Image (cartoon, rainbow, N blue to C red; front, side):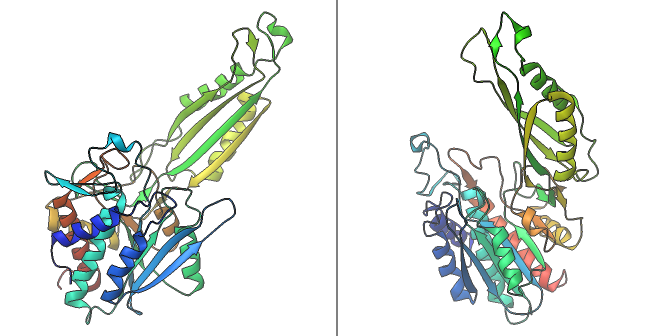
Length: 388
Protein backbone atom coordinates (compact mmCIF):
# COMPACT_ATOMS: atom_id res chain seq x y z
CA UNK A 1 0.00 0.00 0.00
CA UNK A 2 1.28 3.44 -0.89
CA UNK A 3 2.28 5.44 2.16
CA UNK A 4 4.58 8.38 1.49
CA UNK A 5 5.57 11.18 -0.88
CA UNK A 6 8.09 9.05 -2.76
CA UNK A 7 5.23 6.78 -3.86
CA UNK A 8 3.50 9.76 -5.48
CA UNK A 9 6.69 10.67 -7.26
CA UNK A 10 7.24 7.07 -8.36
CA UNK A 11 3.78 6.78 -9.92
CA UNK A 12 4.18 10.19 -11.54
CA UNK A 13 7.50 9.10 -13.04
CA UNK A 14 5.91 5.96 -14.44
CA UNK A 15 3.26 8.10 -16.16
CA UNK A 16 5.80 10.59 -17.52
CA UNK A 17 7.81 7.76 -19.07
CA UNK A 18 4.84 7.13 -21.36
CA UNK A 19 5.18 9.60 -24.29
CA UNK A 20 1.44 10.16 -24.47
CA UNK A 21 1.32 13.07 -26.91
CA UNK A 22 -2.29 13.50 -28.06
CA UNK A 23 -3.83 11.17 -29.24
CA UNK A 24 -1.32 8.46 -28.26
CA UNK A 25 -1.80 6.69 -24.93
CA UNK A 26 1.65 5.08 -24.99
CA UNK A 27 0.81 2.86 -22.01
CA UNK A 28 -0.36 5.55 -19.56
CA UNK A 29 -3.73 4.00 -18.85
CA UNK A 30 -2.13 0.58 -18.38
CA UNK A 31 0.09 2.07 -15.67
CA UNK A 32 -2.88 3.66 -13.93
CA UNK A 33 -5.08 0.60 -14.24
CA UNK A 34 -2.33 -1.61 -12.82
CA UNK A 35 -2.14 0.70 -9.81
CA UNK A 36 -5.90 0.95 -9.21
CA UNK A 37 -7.12 -2.62 -9.69
CA UNK A 38 -5.23 -4.10 -6.71
CA UNK A 39 -6.93 -1.44 -4.56
CA UNK A 40 -10.33 -2.80 -5.54
CA UNK A 41 -11.22 -0.42 -8.37
CA UNK A 42 -13.24 -1.81 -11.27
CA UNK A 43 -11.69 -0.45 -14.44
CA UNK A 44 -13.51 0.09 -17.70
CA UNK A 45 -11.64 1.08 -20.85
CA UNK A 46 -13.55 3.12 -23.40
CA UNK A 47 -12.18 3.55 -26.91
CA UNK A 48 -14.00 6.13 -29.01
CA UNK A 49 -13.65 7.03 -32.64
CA UNK A 50 -15.15 9.50 -35.07
CA UNK A 51 -14.55 10.04 -38.75
CA UNK A 52 -11.65 12.39 -39.34
CA UNK A 53 -10.21 11.92 -35.85
CA UNK A 54 -7.88 9.44 -34.20
CA UNK A 55 -9.15 6.66 -31.94
CA UNK A 56 -8.72 7.58 -28.27
CA UNK A 57 -8.42 5.23 -25.29
CA UNK A 58 -10.04 6.38 -22.02
CA UNK A 59 -10.42 4.91 -18.53
CA UNK A 60 -13.22 4.97 -15.98
CA UNK A 61 -12.34 3.35 -12.66
CA UNK A 62 -14.67 3.06 -9.67
CA UNK A 63 -14.36 1.77 -6.13
CA UNK A 64 -17.71 1.02 -4.51
CA UNK A 65 -21.18 0.56 -5.93
CA UNK A 66 -23.36 2.69 -3.67
CA UNK A 67 -23.55 5.98 -1.85
CA UNK A 68 -22.27 9.26 -3.17
CA UNK A 69 -19.76 8.99 -5.99
CA UNK A 70 -16.84 11.42 -5.72
CA UNK A 71 -15.06 11.56 -9.07
CA UNK A 72 -11.61 12.77 -10.00
CA UNK A 73 -11.29 13.78 -13.66
CA UNK A 74 -8.07 14.21 -15.57
CA UNK A 75 -6.16 13.61 -18.76
CA UNK A 76 -3.04 11.61 -19.47
CA UNK A 77 -2.38 13.14 -22.88
CA UNK A 78 0.23 15.88 -23.15
CA UNK A 79 1.26 18.51 -25.66
CA UNK A 80 4.32 17.85 -27.85
CA UNK A 81 7.65 18.60 -26.16
CA UNK A 82 8.94 20.75 -29.02
CA UNK A 83 12.64 20.48 -29.77
CA UNK A 84 14.00 17.85 -27.40
CA UNK A 85 17.44 19.48 -27.54
CA UNK A 86 15.95 22.59 -25.93
CA UNK A 87 15.26 20.58 -22.78
CA UNK A 88 17.93 20.16 -20.13
CA UNK A 89 16.66 16.60 -19.68
CA UNK A 90 14.76 14.19 -21.93
CA UNK A 91 11.08 15.22 -21.59
CA UNK A 92 9.96 11.60 -21.23
CA UNK A 93 12.71 10.46 -18.89
CA UNK A 94 11.73 12.04 -15.55
CA UNK A 95 14.57 13.57 -13.59
CA UNK A 96 14.73 15.10 -10.11
CA UNK A 97 17.09 18.04 -9.63
CA UNK A 98 17.22 20.54 -6.78
CA UNK A 99 13.84 19.47 -5.45
CA UNK A 100 12.07 19.62 -8.81
CA UNK A 101 10.67 16.76 -10.89
CA UNK A 102 11.20 17.44 -14.61
CA UNK A 103 9.16 15.86 -17.39
CA UNK A 104 6.49 16.59 -19.97
CA UNK A 105 3.08 16.49 -18.34
CA UNK A 106 4.21 16.59 -14.72
CA UNK A 107 2.16 19.71 -13.97
CA UNK A 108 -0.45 19.29 -16.72
CA UNK A 109 -1.51 16.89 -15.35
CA UNK A 110 0.16 13.57 -14.61
CA UNK A 111 1.29 14.85 -11.23
CA UNK A 112 -2.30 15.44 -10.14
CA UNK A 113 -3.40 12.02 -11.42
CA UNK A 114 -0.64 10.34 -9.43
CA UNK A 115 -1.48 12.42 -6.36
CA UNK A 116 -5.15 11.49 -6.44
CA UNK A 117 -4.51 7.81 -7.09
CA UNK A 118 -2.17 7.63 -4.11
CA UNK A 119 -4.56 9.74 -2.01
CA UNK A 120 -7.33 7.27 -2.80
CA UNK A 121 -5.05 4.39 -1.81
CA UNK A 122 -4.28 6.03 1.53
CA UNK A 123 -7.93 6.83 2.16
CA UNK A 124 -9.04 3.28 1.39
CA UNK A 125 -6.26 1.87 3.57
CA UNK A 126 -7.93 3.45 6.60
CA UNK A 127 -11.59 3.87 5.70
CA UNK A 128 -12.74 1.55 2.94
CA UNK A 129 -14.95 -0.50 5.25
CA UNK A 130 -16.76 2.47 6.77
CA UNK A 131 -17.17 5.34 4.32
CA UNK A 132 -20.10 3.77 2.46
CA UNK A 133 -19.60 5.65 -0.79
CA UNK A 134 -17.79 5.42 -4.08
CA UNK A 135 -14.62 6.94 -5.51
CA UNK A 136 -14.05 7.12 -9.24
CA UNK A 137 -11.52 8.36 -11.76
CA UNK A 138 -12.53 9.63 -15.21
CA UNK A 139 -9.34 9.76 -17.25
CA UNK A 140 -9.17 10.73 -20.91
CA UNK A 141 -6.46 10.79 -23.55
CA UNK A 142 -8.11 13.56 -25.57
CA UNK A 143 -8.01 16.83 -23.62
CA UNK A 144 -5.06 18.60 -25.21
CA UNK A 145 -6.36 17.73 -28.68
CA UNK A 146 -9.79 18.17 -30.29
CA UNK A 147 -11.63 16.84 -27.21
CA UNK A 148 -13.99 14.82 -29.37
CA UNK A 149 -13.30 11.21 -28.33
CA UNK A 150 -12.72 11.82 -24.65
CA UNK A 151 -14.59 13.15 -21.63
CA UNK A 152 -17.77 14.18 -23.44
CA UNK A 153 -18.33 10.73 -24.93
CA UNK A 154 -17.34 9.02 -21.68
CA UNK A 155 -20.02 10.99 -19.83
CA UNK A 156 -22.60 10.08 -22.47
CA UNK A 157 -21.80 6.38 -22.13
CA UNK A 158 -21.80 6.46 -18.34
CA UNK A 159 -25.19 8.18 -18.35
CA UNK A 160 -26.54 5.54 -20.72
CA UNK A 161 -25.26 2.86 -18.35
CA UNK A 162 -27.01 4.48 -15.39
CA UNK A 163 -23.80 5.67 -13.76
CA UNK A 164 -24.16 8.70 -11.48
CA UNK A 165 -21.43 11.12 -10.45
CA UNK A 166 -22.33 13.39 -7.52
CA UNK A 167 -19.35 15.75 -7.37
CA UNK A 168 -16.23 16.04 -9.51
CA UNK A 169 -12.75 17.41 -8.93
CA UNK A 170 -10.64 18.11 -12.02
CA UNK A 171 -6.90 18.00 -11.46
CA UNK A 172 -5.90 20.83 -13.83
CA UNK A 173 -2.97 22.98 -12.66
CA UNK A 174 -4.82 25.94 -11.13
CA UNK A 175 -2.26 27.75 -9.00
CA UNK A 176 -0.33 30.72 -10.46
CA UNK A 177 2.85 30.39 -8.36
CA UNK A 178 2.36 28.50 -5.11
CA UNK A 179 0.31 25.43 -4.26
CA UNK A 180 -2.93 26.40 -2.54
CA UNK A 181 -3.42 29.82 -4.12
CA UNK A 182 -6.42 29.13 -6.34
CA UNK A 183 -9.40 26.85 -6.89
CA UNK A 184 -11.34 27.14 -10.14
CA UNK A 185 -15.12 27.12 -9.68
CA UNK A 186 -15.95 27.99 -13.28
CA UNK A 187 -14.44 28.91 -16.61
CA UNK A 188 -14.98 31.52 -19.26
CA UNK A 189 -16.39 30.45 -22.59
CA UNK A 190 -14.31 30.59 -25.76
CA UNK A 191 -15.44 31.74 -29.21
CA UNK A 192 -13.22 31.63 -32.29
CA UNK A 193 -14.21 33.82 -35.23
CA UNK A 194 -12.95 33.84 -38.83
CA UNK A 195 -14.18 36.62 -41.11
CA UNK A 196 -13.57 36.85 -44.86
CA UNK A 197 -14.37 40.21 -46.49
CA UNK A 198 -14.84 40.15 -50.27
CA UNK A 199 -14.00 42.84 -52.81
CA UNK A 200 -12.93 43.29 -56.40
CA UNK A 201 -9.23 43.13 -57.33
CA UNK A 202 -7.80 46.06 -59.24
CA UNK A 203 -4.86 48.38 -59.89
CA UNK A 204 -3.97 50.58 -56.94
CA UNK A 205 -3.64 53.54 -59.34
CA UNK A 206 -7.33 53.17 -60.25
CA UNK A 207 -9.08 52.45 -56.95
CA UNK A 208 -12.42 53.60 -58.37
CA UNK A 209 -12.40 50.58 -60.67
CA UNK A 210 -11.90 48.14 -57.79
CA UNK A 211 -13.62 47.38 -54.51
CA UNK A 212 -11.04 47.30 -51.74
CA UNK A 213 -12.21 44.97 -48.96
CA UNK A 214 -9.55 46.07 -46.48
CA UNK A 215 -11.16 49.30 -45.19
CA UNK A 216 -14.30 47.30 -44.41
CA UNK A 217 -12.25 44.59 -42.71
CA UNK A 218 -10.42 47.25 -40.70
CA UNK A 219 -13.70 48.89 -39.77
CA UNK A 220 -15.13 45.61 -38.52
CA UNK A 221 -12.02 44.82 -36.48
CA UNK A 222 -11.79 48.35 -35.12
CA UNK A 223 -15.33 48.06 -33.85
CA UNK A 224 -14.56 44.73 -32.21
CA UNK A 225 -11.46 45.90 -30.36
CA UNK A 226 -13.04 49.20 -29.25
CA UNK A 227 -16.26 47.68 -27.92
CA UNK A 228 -16.40 46.73 -24.25
CA UNK A 229 -18.44 43.57 -24.06
CA UNK A 230 -19.32 43.82 -20.35
CA UNK A 231 -17.97 44.82 -16.93
CA UNK A 232 -17.72 41.34 -15.44
CA UNK A 233 -19.43 40.33 -12.19
CA UNK A 234 -18.69 38.94 -8.75
CA UNK A 235 -17.20 35.71 -10.12
CA UNK A 236 -15.96 36.63 -13.61
CA UNK A 237 -13.68 39.35 -14.99
CA UNK A 238 -14.85 41.34 -18.03
CA UNK A 239 -15.00 39.39 -21.27
CA UNK A 240 -12.02 39.90 -23.58
CA UNK A 241 -11.48 39.93 -27.33
CA UNK A 242 -8.18 39.47 -29.13
CA UNK A 243 -7.50 39.69 -32.86
CA UNK A 244 -5.16 36.78 -33.55
CA UNK A 245 -4.49 36.96 -37.31
CA UNK A 246 -4.96 39.33 -40.27
CA UNK A 247 -4.25 37.89 -43.72
CA UNK A 248 -4.39 39.37 -47.22
CA UNK A 249 -1.97 37.24 -49.22
CA UNK A 250 -1.01 40.13 -51.46
CA UNK A 251 2.53 39.79 -52.90
CA UNK A 252 2.41 43.11 -54.81
CA UNK A 253 2.31 46.75 -53.76
CA UNK A 254 0.20 47.96 -56.68
CA UNK A 255 -2.73 45.53 -56.48
CA UNK A 256 -5.90 46.04 -54.50
CA UNK A 257 -6.68 42.56 -53.17
CA UNK A 258 -9.93 40.74 -53.80
CA UNK A 259 -10.21 39.48 -50.24
CA UNK A 260 -9.00 40.12 -46.71
CA UNK A 261 -9.57 37.92 -43.72
CA UNK A 262 -8.95 37.88 -40.00
CA UNK A 263 -9.32 35.63 -36.99
CA UNK A 264 -10.23 36.58 -33.44
CA UNK A 265 -10.94 34.95 -30.09
CA UNK A 266 -13.41 36.00 -27.41
CA UNK A 267 -13.14 34.70 -23.84
CA UNK A 268 -16.57 35.44 -22.39
CA UNK A 269 -18.19 35.31 -18.99
CA UNK A 270 -21.70 34.21 -18.08
CA UNK A 271 -23.24 37.49 -19.22
CA UNK A 272 -23.14 35.86 -22.65
CA UNK A 273 -23.67 32.57 -24.43
CA UNK A 274 -22.03 31.43 -27.62
CA UNK A 275 -25.37 31.94 -29.39
CA UNK A 276 -25.88 35.49 -28.12
CA UNK A 277 -22.38 36.54 -29.13
CA UNK A 278 -22.77 34.91 -32.53
CA UNK A 279 -25.93 36.92 -33.13
CA UNK A 280 -24.27 40.19 -32.13
CA UNK A 281 -21.22 39.49 -34.29
CA UNK A 282 -23.46 38.83 -37.27
CA UNK A 283 -25.12 42.22 -36.79
CA UNK A 284 -21.72 43.92 -36.68
CA UNK A 285 -20.57 41.99 -39.74
CA UNK A 286 -23.49 43.27 -41.76
CA UNK A 287 -23.02 46.77 -40.41
CA UNK A 288 -19.28 47.15 -40.98
CA UNK A 289 -17.98 44.42 -43.33
CA UNK A 290 -20.56 44.28 -46.12
CA UNK A 291 -20.01 41.42 -48.59
CA UNK A 292 -18.38 38.90 -46.25
CA UNK A 293 -18.63 35.54 -44.52
CA UNK A 294 -18.26 34.92 -40.80
CA UNK A 295 -17.47 31.48 -39.40
CA UNK A 296 -17.95 31.03 -35.66
CA UNK A 297 -16.77 28.07 -33.56
CA UNK A 298 -17.66 27.76 -29.87
CA UNK A 299 -15.19 25.57 -28.00
CA UNK A 300 -16.87 26.00 -24.63
CA UNK A 301 -19.60 27.95 -22.86
CA UNK A 302 -19.04 29.98 -19.72
CA UNK A 303 -20.10 28.18 -16.55
CA UNK A 304 -20.01 28.62 -12.80
CA UNK A 305 -20.37 26.19 -9.92
CA UNK A 306 -21.54 28.56 -7.17
CA UNK A 307 -19.55 28.36 -3.94
CA UNK A 308 -20.93 25.52 -1.85
CA UNK A 309 -20.14 22.10 -0.48
CA UNK A 310 -17.41 21.14 -2.96
CA UNK A 311 -15.49 24.43 -2.88
CA UNK A 312 -15.89 24.59 0.91
CA UNK A 313 -14.35 21.11 1.32
CA UNK A 314 -11.48 21.91 -1.05
CA UNK A 315 -10.82 25.22 0.71
CA UNK A 316 -10.68 23.55 4.10
CA UNK A 317 -8.37 20.81 2.78
CA UNK A 318 -6.00 23.41 1.29
CA UNK A 319 -6.02 25.44 4.52
CA UNK A 320 -5.22 22.32 6.53
CA UNK A 321 -2.24 21.30 4.38
CA UNK A 322 -0.90 24.62 3.06
CA UNK A 323 -1.99 27.09 5.74
CA UNK A 324 -3.47 29.49 3.17
CA UNK A 325 -6.99 30.25 1.98
CA UNK A 326 -7.29 29.78 -1.79
CA UNK A 327 -9.01 32.25 -4.08
CA UNK A 328 -12.14 30.96 -5.82
CA UNK A 329 -11.51 31.93 -9.44
CA UNK A 330 -12.80 31.54 -13.00
CA UNK A 331 -9.71 32.85 -14.80
CA UNK A 332 -7.62 31.04 -17.40
CA UNK A 333 -8.51 28.93 -20.39
CA UNK A 334 -10.99 26.12 -20.67
CA UNK A 335 -10.88 22.47 -19.58
CA UNK A 336 -12.98 19.32 -19.65
CA UNK A 337 -14.91 20.75 -16.71
CA UNK A 338 -17.01 22.41 -19.42
CA UNK A 339 -18.49 18.98 -20.15
CA UNK A 340 -18.69 17.75 -16.57
CA UNK A 341 -20.63 20.81 -15.32
CA UNK A 342 -23.69 19.48 -17.16
CA UNK A 343 -23.96 16.44 -14.89
CA UNK A 344 -22.74 17.53 -11.44
CA UNK A 345 -21.01 20.29 -9.44
CA UNK A 346 -17.37 20.54 -10.50
CA UNK A 347 -14.29 22.39 -9.30
CA UNK A 348 -10.65 22.30 -10.35
CA UNK A 349 -7.51 22.14 -8.25
CA UNK A 350 -4.03 20.87 -9.03
CA UNK A 351 -0.40 21.93 -9.21
CA UNK A 352 1.00 25.27 -10.35
CA UNK A 353 0.48 26.20 -13.99
CA UNK A 354 3.37 28.57 -14.65
CA UNK A 355 5.49 25.88 -16.36
CA UNK A 356 2.72 23.89 -18.03
CA UNK A 357 3.34 23.29 -21.76
CA UNK A 358 6.80 24.86 -21.49
CA UNK A 359 10.24 23.46 -22.19
CA UNK A 360 11.58 21.94 -18.95
CA UNK A 361 8.09 21.50 -17.51
CA UNK A 362 8.54 20.70 -13.84
CA UNK A 363 6.88 20.56 -10.42
CA UNK A 364 8.24 20.75 -6.90
CA UNK A 365 8.57 17.30 -5.34
CA UNK A 366 7.20 18.76 -2.12
CA UNK A 367 4.14 20.05 -3.98
CA UNK A 368 3.37 16.56 -5.25
CA UNK A 369 3.37 15.31 -1.68
CA UNK A 370 1.25 18.21 -0.44
CA UNK A 371 -1.23 17.83 -3.31
CA UNK A 372 -1.65 14.17 -2.39
CA UNK A 373 -2.35 15.20 1.20
CA UNK A 374 -4.89 17.80 0.03
CA UNK A 375 -6.70 15.19 -2.03
CA UNK A 376 -6.60 12.73 0.88
CA UNK A 377 -8.02 15.40 3.17
CA UNK A 378 -10.70 16.19 0.60
CA UNK A 379 -11.87 12.58 0.51
CA UNK A 380 -12.02 12.45 4.30
CA UNK A 381 -14.04 15.66 4.55
CA UNK A 382 -16.37 14.62 1.74
CA UNK A 383 -17.29 11.22 3.16
CA UNK A 384 -16.86 11.73 6.91
CA UNK A 385 -17.19 15.49 7.45
CA UNK A 386 -14.97 17.72 9.59
CA UNK A 387 -15.43 15.63 12.73
CA UNK A 388 -14.10 12.38 11.26
